[in-house]
Structures are given as structure tokens and as C-alpha cells.
Length: 552
Image (cartoon, rainbow, N blue to C red; front, side, top):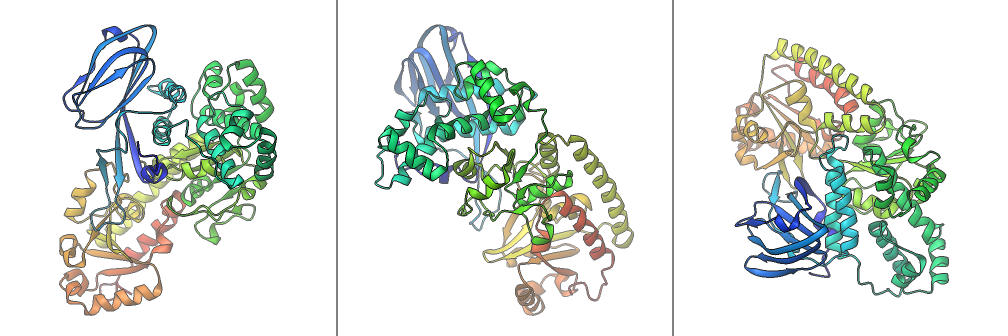
């Protein structure tokens, strides 16, 4: 394995789909044979002997053995043997990655490779604990799909980080402490103590504990305990495990000791925790902030789209808009609001855990694989507002129907193309983000080529936009075109191009002035309140359009 592998960079922007998890107990009678794997396949052998023939290369199986088969590879087990304690885990998954900076379409393409393959080196005891957690959640109706996906992400992170890591303590004491923090976040379920952590940091235990407390305002063991408690809370918020199992999953052998520590930390027993009200919620994503407000919850602190959306009694968090952006906000902002829950998009959960996993439980809601209704339903279930989510969706359906009738009364059933001008080029949007209002709420017709692309995905998920050259816009022409720009200056420049550039003037829609220029900042939020407010604007825009002056 490449020790310089940037695990976080590889997983950023990657979506995962869990296809299968099978736990085999009758190992002697089990055979695995594929000529050409069609999915990424992890095989984890526990207390099992034999051989795995992978692409005609023999891999010995002894005790705990972990192997990864990539799509297209062949594999066959030989001479397997075990006892009543033997287990084999067969996990199949698919990876998808989005290409944001290319001139191609913005869709999620299937990834067939992986940084490692074959026999893998990792902390196999920790891997076993994590895959047991996944197995306990797999196929259980009370556990939501995104939690199972999160467990698989954690398995892949563990593989890419090669736990336990070979740590050479940096000269900088803070950097050494940060390494132990990262280790605790990954290995919280294992037997950790002060001496081991100090050894990893390359320091004397007393000095390490002193420096750690100076940096984090708590001792290493206090930090580890809080990470474990928050992990237990995350599990309890989305599933109903047995307390004995929960204790083991977060690093406690004695379930009664775990229960006492949990009650001291949370104020209620593990069996009661999920029914207690969440008194302080923090949102790391402005769309999810909108969702909370839609459900009647004012977050204690949150990322807000714009100042007008900021309630008087909420703290605005200066957080990155994208997972690749630097995290510059300090821990103090979170410590001051004392959150009982932190919610975020799945593409920033790794960064959030790195910085604040000891402060509160962190639940990620999948962003691209779910639409706005899925988001609202998931958050509603998480915060105990399922009925409020259902009521909003029913009201929105009714208002959308009225809005459609108003537009149809004026324009009939027109076709519409939605474009956004960016520094990297022209984008044509589908039924997500701003496209939701026009294609889903108002049910306007997209151009045929775009409609074909949209039909490949569940409405509002995965597919967002296509990158298109202006020269190819004749393939996306429709009755009306919306152009979204980033500033008034950009709008003026585009207006001049549309009036003078022969490439644009080839389109009858442009020549006849059947287009609109709108500010992207106002229309960009993909969340319930924003959609409801913009729906009325969209109806007014289309219903009151005059044939002679639509583009002003």
C-alpha cells in the first residue's frame, strides 16, 4: 500500500452504494468463486484457514485475513476450514465519483478502481468491530440506509489509513497530539489507555496529558470518553441496538459500567436517550438549516445562506461551502453553544469529525443521493418532527398544483431550459436545485436531450447539471430559457452577448426575446422554505411575462 495515500482526498466527493453483506458461519461448506467480479467485494475471514486464489495469485488465509476484490477480478476459495467460532464476511459495494471540474456532464460515474486491492493490512480487530456494527444494522428496518453507508465509509477509511498507523512523532508537540486525536476517533472501540496514547505521541504520559489538556481543555481520557459517548448517541438516534451490543461497539466490555457512564454524560439512560428532546441543534449546512426552520426548530448555531435568514437567537457559523474548502472556524464556537446534536451533509462529515467529534454526536444526511423531500423526511425523523415534515410536503403539493394551474392558464405547457453562467462555462440544470421549482413543482417540460438525461436518475437525485458549449445550445432550445448569473456585471455582459453574438442569435428563443436573466444567489438554495418562496416568484415571472420584453 502507498503510505502517502491521501485517504480524505480519495473519499471526498465519492458516493457509496452498499449492495450486499453476508455473514457466513458454516465456513467449511462455503465456497466463493467468481470469474469476473461486478462490484467491489471485501472478504473478511475470522478464525478461518485456507487459500484465496485471486487473479491466479494465492493468498494464504489464516486467523483474521482481509482481502479486497475489484470489479473485473477473479477469485476462488480453496481448502477452507474452521470451527464453531469461524466467520466470513462478504461485503459488496459500488463507488461513484462526481467530476466537477471537467467539460463533461456533471453526473456520478461508477468507479471501478480503489487505491488498494488483494491482501490488505489494517487493524483487523478494529475492522472486525466496525463490520460487526454494520452487520447489526444491515437489513434492519429501523436503521436508515445512510447510516449503513456511513459504516461502510468508516471501513474504507480504516483500510486507507492502515490502522494501527505507524506513527513517527513530529517535532511539533501539537502535531503529535493531533495524531493521537485522529487515532482515538478511529480506534475508539479498541482498548486504549493513557500509556498507549502517550507512546503514539512519543511523549512521557504525564507530559502528554499536560500538553493535551492545554490544547483541548480536557485530558486525553476525558476526550476519548466523550468521543465514545457521542458515538453511542449517534447509534441510538438512528437505531435500537441492545445495550450489551452498543457497549461493545463503543469500546466498553461491561454494559453496566457503560450505562452508568452514559447516564452521567447524557442525563438519561441509553434506553431512554432517543426519546429525550434535543435541546440544542447545530447545522453545518445552510440547506439543512432551512429544513430545521421549516420543521419549527431554530438551531442554536448554524451555517446560514444569507443574513436575512438568521434568527435573532441563533449564532451564524462561518463554515466552508464545500468539502474541499478549508475548515477555519475554531472549536470555541461549538463549545459555547453546547450542542446536543450536529447535523451535516455526508461530504463534510469526515472534516466535522476531525474537529468536533468530542463535542456532540454528528449525524450526516446524504446530500446528492437524496432529494429535498428525502432530506426533510430524514431530518424530521431525526429531530422528532415527522408529522411536521409530512404536513409541509402535503401543503407544498397543494401549492404546487395551484401554481401549475396559474402558469398553464397563461402559457399552456411550455418547455423551458435552465442555464447558469459560471467562470468555468455554461451549465444546463436538471430537476434538482433551481430545477426543482420549474420541472417538479411547475412540471414544465425540459428539452428532449435534457429529459433523456434526467430519466436516468430518480427525480432530484445524483444528476444536477450538464456542461454545455454555447455552440451546442440548439440541442437544448425550448420555448423559454432562464439564465442565472453571479452578479449584475455578469448579467450585463451576458445580455450584451445575447443581443450581438451570432452563436446565441441562431436560437429563435433568443431572437424573440423569450429569456430571463436572474440572480443565482437568490435562487440557489435547495431547501423547503427557499423553494416555497421562490415558487411564487417563478409563477409571477412566467405568468406576467410580456412577449416583447421578457429578458429584462
